[in-house]
Amino acid sequence: MNYLDYAATTPVNPEVLEVITKEMASFGNPSSVYRIGREQKQKIERVKKAILSELQASPHDAIIFTSSGSEGNNLVFESIREHFAKEKGHIIVSAVEHPSVRKPAEFLEQEGFEVTYLAPNKDGIVTVSEIEQALREDTRLVSIMTVNNETGARFPIEEIAALLKDKPTYFHTDAVQAFAQEALTVDGIDYLTASGHKIYAPKGIGFLYKSKDAPIHALIKGGGQELGFRAGTENVPYILGLEKAMQIVVAKRDELVKNYQELREYLFAKLSERGIEFEFNGVANPKNPHICNIWLKGRKATQTLIFNDLQDVSVSAGSACSAGSVQISPVLSAMYPSENSRLEQSIRLSFGMGSTKEDIDAFVDALH
Image (cartoon, rainbow, N blue to C red; front, side):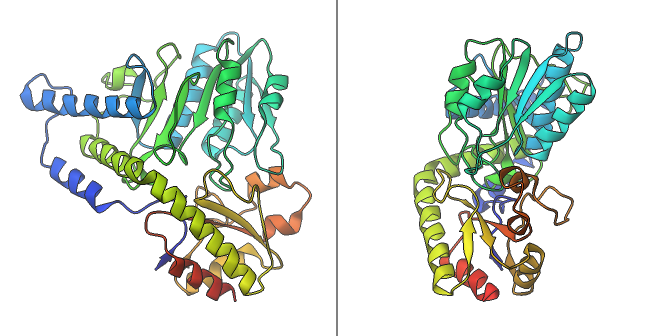
Protein backbone atom coordinates (compact mmCIF):
# COMPACT_ATOMS: atom_id res chain seq x y z
CA MET A 1 0.00 0.00 0.00
CA ASN A 2 1.18 3.53 -0.86
CA TYR A 3 -0.22 5.66 1.97
CA LEU A 4 -0.22 9.43 1.49
CA ASP A 5 -2.86 10.54 4.00
CA TYR A 6 -1.00 10.95 7.29
CA ALA A 7 -3.00 14.10 8.10
CA ALA A 8 -6.06 11.85 8.37
CA THR A 9 -4.39 9.37 10.72
CA THR A 10 -1.05 7.70 11.33
CA PRO A 11 -0.17 4.07 11.99
CA VAL A 12 0.65 3.22 15.60
CA ASN A 13 4.42 3.21 16.03
CA PRO A 14 5.73 -0.26 17.09
CA GLU A 15 7.49 1.27 20.12
CA VAL A 16 4.22 2.93 21.13
CA LEU A 17 2.36 -0.36 20.69
CA GLU A 18 4.94 -2.09 22.90
CA VAL A 19 4.42 0.45 25.70
CA ILE A 20 0.64 0.13 25.47
CA THR A 21 0.69 -3.69 25.42
CA LYS A 22 2.96 -3.82 28.46
CA GLU A 23 0.80 -1.33 30.37
CA MET A 24 -2.36 -3.35 29.65
CA ALA A 25 -1.16 -5.79 32.33
CA SER A 26 -1.32 -3.01 34.95
CA PHE A 27 -4.97 -2.93 35.88
CA GLY A 28 -5.15 -0.60 38.88
CA ASN A 29 -7.71 2.22 38.92
CA PRO A 30 -5.95 5.61 39.20
CA SER A 31 -8.68 6.82 41.56
CA SER A 32 -7.97 4.05 44.09
CA VAL A 33 -6.03 4.86 47.26
CA TYR A 34 -4.08 1.61 47.48
CA ARG A 35 -0.65 1.06 45.94
CA ILE A 36 -1.48 -0.17 42.42
CA GLY A 37 -4.00 2.66 42.01
CA ARG A 38 -1.50 5.25 43.24
CA GLU A 39 1.10 3.90 40.80
CA GLN A 40 -1.31 4.42 37.91
CA LYS A 41 -2.04 7.96 39.09
CA GLN A 42 1.68 8.73 39.26
CA LYS A 43 2.12 7.59 35.65
CA ILE A 44 -0.66 9.94 34.52
CA GLU A 45 0.88 12.86 36.39
CA ARG A 46 4.27 12.12 34.86
CA VAL A 47 2.85 12.32 31.34
CA LYS A 48 1.06 15.58 32.14
CA LYS A 49 4.33 17.10 33.32
CA ALA A 50 6.05 15.92 30.13
CA ILE A 51 3.39 17.56 27.94
CA LEU A 52 3.54 20.81 29.94
CA SER A 53 7.32 20.78 29.48
CA GLU A 54 7.01 20.23 25.72
CA LEU A 55 4.61 23.19 25.54
CA GLN A 56 6.90 25.35 27.71
CA ALA A 57 3.95 25.80 30.04
CA SER A 58 3.77 26.66 33.72
CA PRO A 59 3.53 23.68 36.11
CA HIS A 60 0.43 25.42 37.52
CA ASP A 61 -1.39 24.99 34.18
CA ALA A 62 -3.48 21.89 33.47
CA ILE A 63 -3.56 18.98 31.03
CA ILE A 64 -6.91 17.20 30.69
CA PHE A 65 -6.83 13.93 28.77
CA THR A 66 -9.62 13.46 26.22
CA SER A 67 -10.63 10.92 23.60
CA SER A 68 -9.77 13.19 20.65
CA GLY A 69 -9.05 16.66 19.36
CA SER A 70 -12.77 17.02 18.64
CA GLU A 71 -13.67 16.38 22.28
CA GLY A 72 -11.08 18.91 23.42
CA ASN A 73 -12.40 21.55 21.03
CA ASN A 74 -15.97 20.95 22.17
CA LEU A 75 -14.85 21.17 25.81
CA VAL A 76 -13.39 24.63 25.14
CA PHE A 77 -16.58 25.97 23.55
CA GLU A 78 -18.80 24.39 26.20
CA SER A 79 -16.65 26.05 28.87
CA ILE A 80 -17.06 29.47 27.22
CA ARG A 81 -20.82 28.90 26.83
CA GLU A 82 -21.19 28.02 30.53
CA HIS A 83 -18.87 30.75 31.78
CA PHE A 84 -20.66 33.51 29.85
CA ALA A 85 -24.14 31.99 29.98
CA LYS A 86 -25.80 35.16 31.26
CA GLU A 87 -24.05 37.93 29.36
CA LYS A 88 -23.24 35.95 26.15
CA GLY A 89 -20.89 38.00 23.96
CA HIS A 90 -18.75 37.70 20.85
CA ILE A 91 -16.54 34.94 19.43
CA ILE A 92 -14.00 35.03 16.59
CA VAL A 93 -13.01 31.97 14.56
CA SER A 94 -11.42 31.56 11.17
CA ALA A 95 -13.62 30.27 8.35
CA VAL A 96 -11.19 27.40 7.73
CA GLU A 97 -11.35 25.74 11.14
CA HIS A 98 -11.89 22.01 11.58
CA PRO A 99 -15.59 21.01 11.85
CA SER A 100 -15.07 20.32 15.57
CA VAL A 101 -14.52 24.08 16.00
CA ARG A 102 -16.92 25.38 13.36
CA LYS A 103 -19.91 23.39 14.61
CA PRO A 104 -19.53 24.31 18.31
CA ALA A 105 -19.17 27.95 17.18
CA GLU A 106 -22.43 27.62 15.23
CA PHE A 107 -24.08 26.06 18.30
CA LEU A 108 -23.02 28.99 20.48
CA GLU A 109 -24.43 31.30 17.81
CA GLN A 110 -27.79 29.57 18.24
CA GLU A 111 -27.42 30.05 21.99
CA GLY A 112 -27.20 33.83 21.59
CA PHE A 113 -23.49 34.51 21.10
CA GLU A 114 -22.37 36.54 18.10
CA VAL A 115 -19.73 34.84 15.96
CA THR A 116 -17.38 36.45 13.44
CA TYR A 117 -16.02 34.02 10.83
CA LEU A 118 -12.85 35.52 9.37
CA ALA A 119 -12.27 34.64 5.72
CA PRO A 120 -8.71 33.56 4.86
CA ASN A 121 -6.49 35.14 2.25
CA LYS A 122 -5.22 33.05 -0.68
CA ASP A 123 -2.38 31.76 1.49
CA GLY A 124 -5.08 30.17 3.61
CA ILE A 125 -4.58 32.20 6.79
CA VAL A 126 -6.09 35.14 8.63
CA THR A 127 -3.77 37.93 9.69
CA VAL A 128 -3.23 39.46 13.11
CA SER A 129 -4.53 42.82 11.86
CA GLU A 130 -7.80 41.20 10.75
CA ILE A 131 -8.26 39.72 14.20
CA GLU A 132 -7.42 43.06 15.82
CA GLN A 133 -10.04 44.80 13.66
CA ALA A 134 -12.66 42.17 14.55
CA LEU A 135 -12.09 42.38 18.31
CA ARG A 136 -14.80 43.93 20.46
CA GLU A 137 -15.03 44.79 24.13
CA ASP A 138 -17.27 41.75 24.62
CA THR A 139 -15.12 39.28 22.62
CA ARG A 140 -15.00 36.20 24.86
CA LEU A 141 -12.98 33.79 22.73
CA VAL A 142 -10.72 33.79 19.69
CA SER A 143 -10.20 30.31 18.22
CA ILE A 144 -7.59 30.03 15.46
CA MET A 145 -5.94 26.75 14.48
CA THR A 146 -2.15 26.35 14.43
CA VAL A 147 -1.84 24.40 11.16
CA ASN A 148 -4.70 23.85 8.74
CA ASN A 149 -5.52 20.18 8.27
CA GLU A 150 -6.27 20.54 4.54
CA THR A 151 -3.69 23.01 3.24
CA GLY A 152 -0.88 22.91 5.81
CA ALA A 153 -1.12 26.70 6.22
CA ARG A 154 0.56 27.84 9.45
CA PHE A 155 -1.31 30.58 11.31
CA PRO A 156 0.55 33.32 13.23
CA ILE A 157 -0.60 32.07 16.62
CA GLU A 158 2.37 33.55 18.49
CA GLU A 159 1.51 37.03 17.23
CA ILE A 160 -2.19 36.47 17.94
CA ALA A 161 -1.33 35.36 21.49
CA ALA A 162 0.76 38.50 21.96
CA LEU A 163 -2.13 40.65 20.72
CA LEU A 164 -4.60 39.06 23.15
CA LYS A 165 -2.30 38.62 26.14
CA ASP A 166 -3.41 41.75 27.98
CA LYS A 167 -7.01 41.68 26.77
CA PRO A 168 -10.01 40.10 28.55
CA THR A 169 -10.36 37.58 25.73
CA TYR A 170 -9.51 33.88 25.87
CA PHE A 171 -7.42 32.38 23.07
CA HIS A 172 -7.76 28.78 21.85
CA THR A 173 -5.72 27.04 19.17
CA ASP A 174 -6.47 23.65 17.64
CA ALA A 175 -2.93 22.25 17.38
CA VAL A 176 -3.86 18.76 16.20
CA GLN A 177 -1.69 19.04 13.05
CA ALA A 178 1.19 20.75 14.87
CA PHE A 179 1.69 19.28 18.34
CA ALA A 180 5.07 17.50 18.63
CA GLN A 181 5.66 18.01 14.90
CA GLU A 182 6.95 21.50 15.67
CA ALA A 183 8.10 23.22 18.85
CA LEU A 184 5.19 25.12 20.40
CA THR A 185 4.93 27.50 23.32
CA VAL A 186 1.67 28.35 25.06
CA ASP A 187 2.75 31.79 26.19
CA GLY A 188 -0.44 33.87 25.84
CA ILE A 189 -2.54 30.83 24.88
CA ASP A 190 -5.40 29.82 27.18
CA TYR A 191 -6.43 26.56 25.51
CA LEU A 192 -4.61 24.16 23.16
CA THR A 193 -5.97 20.88 21.85
CA ALA A 194 -4.12 17.89 20.39
CA SER A 195 -4.75 14.30 19.31
CA GLY A 196 -2.59 11.20 19.61
CA HIS A 197 -3.50 9.48 16.36
CA LYS A 198 -1.86 12.24 14.32
CA ILE A 199 1.54 11.42 15.87
CA TYR A 200 1.62 7.58 15.80
CA ALA A 201 -0.38 6.92 18.98
CA PRO A 202 -3.75 5.15 18.78
CA LYS A 203 -7.09 6.72 18.00
CA GLY A 204 -8.97 7.49 21.18
CA ILE A 205 -6.47 9.61 23.11
CA GLY A 206 -5.87 13.37 23.08
CA PHE A 207 -5.59 16.25 25.50
CA LEU A 208 -6.68 19.77 26.27
CA TYR A 209 -4.13 22.17 27.71
CA LYS A 210 -5.60 25.03 29.72
CA SER A 211 -3.86 27.90 31.42
CA LYS A 212 -4.27 28.32 35.17
CA ASP A 213 -6.89 31.07 34.90
CA ALA A 214 -8.91 29.83 31.90
CA PRO A 215 -12.48 28.77 32.79
CA ILE A 216 -13.40 25.13 32.33
CA HIS A 217 -16.75 23.32 32.67
CA ALA A 218 -17.08 19.58 32.27
CA LEU A 219 -18.69 18.04 29.20
CA ILE A 220 -18.66 14.60 30.86
CA LYS A 221 -19.81 14.71 34.47
CA GLY A 222 -19.29 11.93 36.97
CA GLY A 223 -16.60 10.68 39.31
CA GLY A 224 -14.35 13.71 39.39
CA GLN A 225 -11.42 12.42 37.34
CA GLU A 226 -9.15 14.87 35.49
CA LEU A 227 -9.50 17.57 38.14
CA GLY A 228 -13.28 17.15 37.90
CA PHE A 229 -13.34 18.39 34.31
CA ARG A 230 -13.62 15.05 32.47
CA ALA A 231 -15.23 12.13 34.27
CA GLY A 232 -14.40 8.51 33.47
CA THR A 233 -11.58 6.19 34.51
CA GLU A 234 -8.43 7.28 32.72
CA ASN A 235 -7.07 5.19 29.84
CA VAL A 236 -3.57 4.76 31.27
CA PRO A 237 -2.16 2.50 28.51
CA TYR A 238 -3.11 5.04 25.80
CA ILE A 239 -1.88 7.96 27.92
CA LEU A 240 1.53 6.28 28.16
CA GLY A 241 1.34 5.51 24.45
CA LEU A 242 0.78 9.20 23.77
CA GLU A 243 3.82 10.05 25.87
CA LYS A 244 6.00 7.61 23.92
CA ALA A 245 4.69 8.86 20.57
CA MET A 246 5.44 12.45 21.58
CA GLN A 247 8.98 11.51 22.57
CA ILE A 248 9.62 9.73 19.25
CA VAL A 249 8.29 12.56 17.07
CA VAL A 250 10.02 15.31 19.06
CA ALA A 251 13.36 13.48 18.82
CA LYS A 252 13.02 13.17 15.02
CA ARG A 253 11.14 16.31 14.06
CA ASP A 254 14.01 18.24 12.46
CA GLU A 255 14.85 15.21 10.36
CA LEU A 256 11.18 14.66 9.51
CA VAL A 257 10.59 18.25 8.41
CA LYS A 258 13.62 18.04 6.13
CA ASN A 259 12.36 14.76 4.67
CA TYR A 260 8.85 16.16 4.11
CA GLN A 261 10.28 19.16 2.27
CA GLU A 262 12.34 16.85 0.02
CA LEU A 263 9.27 14.67 -0.68
CA ARG A 264 7.23 17.78 -1.46
CA GLU A 265 9.83 18.99 -3.96
CA TYR A 266 10.07 15.50 -5.47
CA LEU A 267 6.27 15.38 -5.88
CA PHE A 268 6.16 18.64 -7.79
CA ALA A 269 9.16 17.64 -9.93
CA LYS A 270 7.49 14.34 -10.89
CA LEU A 271 4.18 16.02 -11.71
CA SER A 272 5.97 18.52 -13.95
CA GLU A 273 8.06 15.79 -15.55
CA ARG A 274 4.89 13.89 -16.52
CA GLY A 275 3.24 17.04 -17.89
CA ILE A 276 0.44 16.97 -15.32
CA GLU A 277 -1.08 20.42 -14.86
CA PHE A 278 -1.28 21.45 -11.22
CA GLU A 279 -1.23 24.42 -8.90
CA PHE A 280 -0.71 24.83 -5.17
CA ASN A 281 -3.63 25.65 -2.92
CA GLY A 282 -2.15 28.03 -0.39
CA VAL A 283 1.53 28.85 -0.05
CA ALA A 284 4.03 26.90 -2.12
CA ASN A 285 6.43 26.29 0.77
CA PRO A 286 4.61 26.30 4.11
CA LYS A 287 6.40 25.98 7.43
CA ASN A 288 4.74 22.58 7.87
CA PRO A 289 5.51 20.79 4.59
CA HIS A 290 3.83 17.48 5.50
CA ILE A 291 0.50 18.59 3.98
CA CYS A 292 0.17 19.34 0.24
CA ASN A 293 -3.06 20.55 -1.26
CA ILE A 294 -2.97 20.52 -5.05
CA TRP A 295 -5.33 21.60 -7.78
CA LEU A 296 -5.03 18.95 -10.52
CA LYS A 297 -6.44 20.90 -13.42
CA GLY A 298 -9.11 19.12 -15.43
CA ARG A 299 -9.25 16.10 -13.09
CA LYS A 300 -12.24 15.69 -10.80
CA ALA A 301 -11.15 14.86 -7.25
CA THR A 302 -13.65 12.00 -7.01
CA GLN A 303 -12.15 10.31 -10.08
CA THR A 304 -8.60 10.91 -8.85
CA LEU A 305 -9.41 9.23 -5.53
CA ILE A 306 -11.02 6.23 -7.22
CA PHE A 307 -8.22 5.68 -9.76
CA ASN A 308 -5.60 5.94 -7.02
CA ASP A 309 -7.49 3.60 -4.72
CA LEU A 310 -7.66 1.01 -7.52
CA GLN A 311 -3.85 1.22 -7.65
CA ASP A 312 -3.68 0.91 -3.82
CA VAL A 313 -2.64 4.55 -3.38
CA SER A 314 -4.37 6.40 -0.52
CA VAL A 315 -4.91 10.15 -0.90
CA SER A 316 -7.66 12.49 0.26
CA ALA A 317 -9.94 15.21 -1.05
CA GLY A 318 -9.62 17.14 2.23
CA SER A 319 -10.61 16.54 5.83
CA ALA A 320 -11.21 12.91 6.75
CA CYS A 321 -14.05 13.93 9.08
CA SER A 322 -16.96 13.96 6.62
CA ALA A 323 -18.27 10.46 7.37
CA GLY A 324 -16.48 8.92 4.39
CA SER A 325 -18.11 11.23 1.86
CA VAL A 326 -16.35 13.39 -0.74
CA GLN A 327 -17.71 16.90 -0.50
CA ILE A 328 -16.59 20.34 -1.66
CA SER A 329 -14.07 21.48 0.93
CA PRO A 330 -15.32 24.35 3.14
CA VAL A 331 -11.65 25.31 3.58
CA LEU A 332 -11.00 25.71 -0.15
CA SER A 333 -14.44 27.31 -0.60
CA ALA A 334 -13.43 29.99 1.89
CA MET A 335 -10.06 30.51 0.17
CA TYR A 336 -11.33 30.44 -3.44
CA PRO A 337 -15.07 31.26 -3.31
CA SER A 338 -15.52 31.84 -7.05
CA GLU A 339 -13.23 29.11 -8.48
CA ASN A 340 -15.56 26.14 -8.90
CA SER A 341 -13.14 24.09 -11.01
CA ARG A 342 -10.44 24.39 -8.37
CA LEU A 343 -12.87 23.27 -5.66
CA GLU A 344 -13.91 20.17 -7.61
CA GLN A 345 -10.41 19.21 -8.77
CA SER A 346 -8.25 19.54 -5.65
CA ILE A 347 -6.81 16.79 -3.49
CA ARG A 348 -4.66 16.53 -0.37
CA LEU A 349 -1.50 14.49 0.07
CA SER A 350 0.16 14.30 3.46
CA PHE A 351 3.45 12.72 4.49
CA GLY A 352 4.58 10.85 7.57
CA MET A 353 7.42 8.76 8.96
CA GLY A 354 6.79 5.96 6.50
CA SER A 355 6.53 8.11 3.36
CA THR A 356 8.92 7.42 0.48
CA LYS A 357 9.58 8.62 -3.04
CA GLU A 358 8.14 5.29 -4.20
CA ASP A 359 4.77 6.34 -2.73
CA ILE A 360 4.89 9.50 -4.83
CA ASP A 361 5.92 7.54 -7.93
CA ALA A 362 2.88 5.30 -7.46
CA PHE A 363 0.60 8.33 -7.13
CA VAL A 364 1.98 10.06 -10.23
CA ASP A 365 1.86 6.79 -12.20
CA ALA A 366 -1.83 6.39 -11.30
CA LEU A 367 -2.52 9.96 -12.45
CA HIS A 368 -0.60 9.44 -15.68
